Length: 75
Image (cartoon, rainbow, N blue to C red):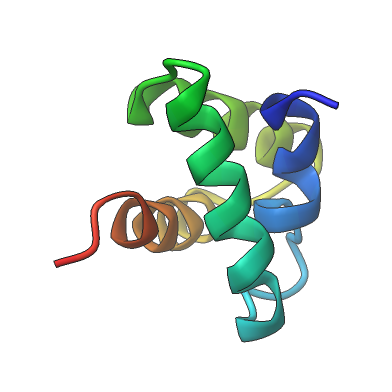
């Protein structure tokens, strides 16, 4: 299973924002994407495409992208 196929399970919920119980899965997905040589922009593109297809608003997309960015490069 590629990291792209795991995006919906980690960041694709339109009805609710990212939840803590998904954080470990999201961290694993991000690690897998990095190992595969993906950039954050590629992850973001996959997230936006999936969320768009689910009818997410721009605010919902931005919220989940911000959460993914925080996990991608924690401070």
